[in-house]
Each structure stands twice: as structure tokens, then as C-alpha cells.
Amino acid sequence: MGFERAVVTGGAGFLGSHVCEALLRRGVRVVCVDDFRTGSPDNVPQGAGLVVADVSKPLDLLGPVDLVLHLACPASPVDYLREPVETMKSGGFGTLHAVELARRKGARIVVASTSEVYGDPLEHPQRETYWGNVNPIGPRSVYDEAKRFGEALTCAFRREHGVDTGIVRIFNTYGPRMRPDDGRMIPTFVRQARAGEPLTVHGDGSHTRSLCHVDDLVRGLLAMAESDHPGPVNLGNPEEVTVLEVAHRVIEVTGGRSEIRHVEPMEDDPQRRRPDIALARRELGWQPEIDLAEGLHRSFGRHLVG
Image (tube, rainbow, N blue to C red; front, side, top):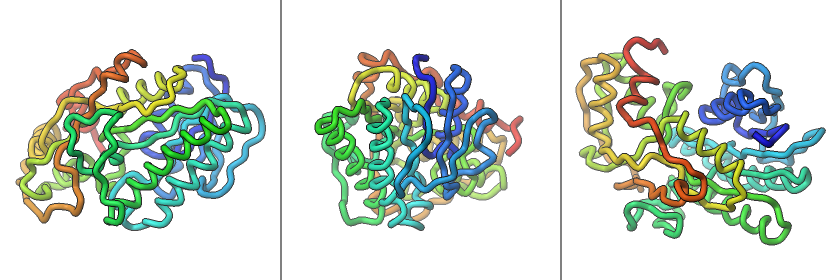
């Protein structure tokens, strides 16, 4: 890998910690920036530097930096509904400070956006050219709109200041180190199945998701970092499954005997979610290699603990 020193904001989180490990394996010196609001010090890999900082405040680091991966932002509904203002600060001001850091250092920056910018999509599957269907004042908007603003800001810095920027739109991702109380679908299902509790499915479970294993997602992020593509580029697994099917698969891989309990639908919850990854295939040479069955067994199989 052609980078010498990388900064990973949100590096103590689920995705960020896996990114830090992958960079270290490739011989890159890594600085993890995190305030542990949703991440954990236990996730910071050995060999990575650590700066405890809130990215919604100005960020500066000594020494050269040639890559910034901006991943810091609450990504779980539990987190961003509990701290809506802080979520907007992380997604908005945090992106500003990360891109400013890249501008000062002359670094390439990859900004993590999200499939949530498509809202409850009217186009299926979702291509990068689709502008989305987002409720700008609903409870989920603090995350959706912060990411949309972050994309616009990143593009503005590229146009006005010539910053080497890239944007990735990350679809649902899962794997080891997700918090059991994360609030997202898979860690919630796994926690409930291991405890022998009913798995709570919102609505009738017919709404769909496309789930990408974290190892595949990290490969895509690093491929984007090594490219000069500005994005946005979708990163996700186009294997589309219903939420009800995911619940049954989790019960199977954890060896549980839980039942399914249907609860009220979530407000503004997208009904269908599937990425068109033609651009990632063409420009990054990337596509997922781990299907859902393998990924769930690898991450949460009954032989694993925790």
C-alpha cells in the first residue's frame, strides 16, 4: 500500500477498528482518533497510535499524514436517536474538521457516507446517481441529513480547494465487535438468540436489507483509498434478504430455539435496500466475496463466545 501514515477517525468503533487492523497489516502507521462515545478502548489494535478527541471540534495532529479515513459518527439508531444533536455535529462538523486536516496535510481523504442518504428509496436497486427519498425532519434525519451534508461539504472542498477526496456510501455491514446493545438488526438478533429471548422483528419482516461482512467492506474502503475516484461509490453486498429471513438465519447459526415476535414498525424505516455495485466493480475492482450464510457462521456461529 502506498501510504505511510493514516488517520482513522472513529478508529475504536466496530468498522474503524477493523480498518485500523487492515492498515497495520499492510505496513501503514495508524493514528486512531476517537472519543469513545460509541467505540471502546479495547477495540484499538496494538501498534496503533491513539488520540482521544471529539471530531466535532477542530482536529490537528503533528507530523505527516497521507491518508485520512473519516468514519467517526454514531451509526446505530439507538445511538443517534439518543444523541441527535451530537450525531449532527459528528456528521457535519466532524466531516469539516477531517477534510480540513486532509487539506492541511495534503492527504487523500475517504469520507464514509451511508446508504441512508437514499432514505426509503423509490429506485431499486440504488445507484449512486439516485438522489434519494429522505424525510428531512423525521427522527432518523439527524443521521441521514448529517451524512448528506457531509457529502456536499466533501465535494465543495474538492472543487474549491483541490482536496483529494473520495466518498463511499456504506450499506448494512456486520461482523465481530458489534456491541450487543448496538440496536442494529444483527447484533440485536444475536443477543436475543443467545439469551433465548424472542427475536423482535419490526412490522411483518418483509422489508429487505443487503448485508455485507466487515472483511469485504474493509477491502472496499482500502480499494477506494488507493484509487483517485471522487465517488460517491456504493459499498455493500447486493444479496438482498428479508429481515424475517435474517432472523431465522441468526437463530440457526447461534444454535438457539428462539421464537419470532413482531413489534411495531420503526418510523421512516426503509422498505427495500440493495446496492447497485457496478461502479465499485468497474472503478475499484471490488465486489463482496462472503455470502450471508458464511459471514454469520464466521462471526456468530455457535462455537464462538461473546
